[in-house]
Image (cartoon, rainbow, N blue to C red; front, side):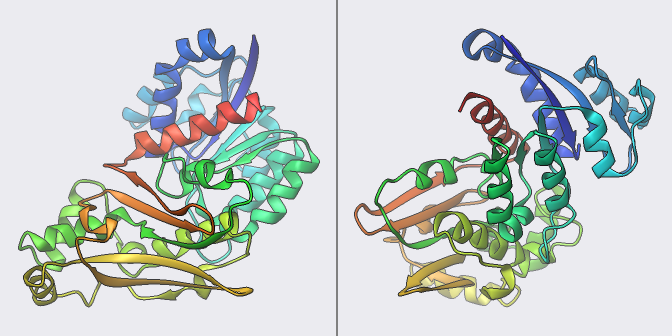
Length: 341
């Protein structure tokens, strides 16, 4: 039975959910998939970092952070403060890269992934930045090292968007559309219930869906980077968020919500990408949709993506009520697929 040493770079909600999931699925990994693992290194943004070649105890990792203590106390060897040196020192077989996203250039996550691949590690990430800004370079590097660079959790959390739509032989993707930002969808759903925009944002923040600064969501940046990632991978064309025609939901007023409801329609923040000859155009904007559109039924934090091909027509994938646990599953699936392919 193969044993894999794991490094977790970034240990926020998603990293912790991944650790819990690894522990919960340990027996299945062992008995059904012949996979054993050891978490040998964990780095947080502000609560220390630890390396133990013999393996870090998951319960101890989580309880240490819950008590407000530093992970430094769990390290049995020196854990470099520099992330690139930390990756190298970890001696891992697999890196889970889950540092904060950079919409502008994907750094420093791109460099983290390069370092891991150069050290002959597989990489799984929930970070959209490297997919948008470094997909081809990182994929080529992974191929040259006979390693995997997987990123299923970057769009729609753990739903298998890339896995499903990349393996359609001789099917050309003509367009992609969907509701890809769950935060704005929740805000719009709350406004339909009579809440103001500000109150809807505050509610999303209170349940941990929206950030303290919600601009990345409400101004359409998160949706733009997600549609860019889908274009880069599924349409094999480099595309950045700055290239996306973008409008957020700040101008959607209670009056507009009421008018849409009276017309039997709903407001959604819709992402679209369309191939036109040799060019691709992409847009993120609020749109009114009617009941004939699959996006009409998407409530709260639910997301949907619809892909149109030249041979299968339109295919849709829906994810209901995502969270750190679903993102963690995407990372786990990437790990399993990396070591089994």
